[in-house]
Length: 206
Image (cartoon, rainbow, N blue to C red; front, top):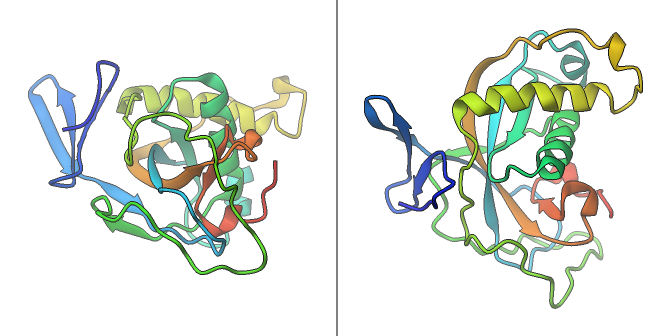
């Protein structure tokens, strides 16, 4: 199993299970990862970032942004740094990407989707955090619900400076741990230097 002293859950790439400490011992459930959907070239090793996804049926702003289905709150689970949680959480919430989910973690962690247009990656990008192909999970299920309220307030204040007009606590339903494909790219400073390999993020620039 992979995970350090700060890990809230432990990932086993070999068996594809996530192990969660509970009062009754370890409980396991299958890891779920999103497929790479970017249309741009990828010349770096793909990493998979742990993110909690929670249903938010009463969040009108997000429901209006969803073409069909449910709206979600996304809480990065691989870092406790405020900028990472806020920036990536807000980006995912505002974008509401359509994810192609598969059970388990991909065995092949390097991919090169077909090149569309003239987009190119830097020849020698900084490697970023050294946690291998699969990120740690440092945010527990309970903490994800707390941080979801923080992300909610960050989204609501994204276009308004009057937090007094923001409604109270957001109603949340369920938590799902998903590993999103990404590469470290310092040109994506507004996403905490992570480029998510999802087609919805292909037009972002630093």
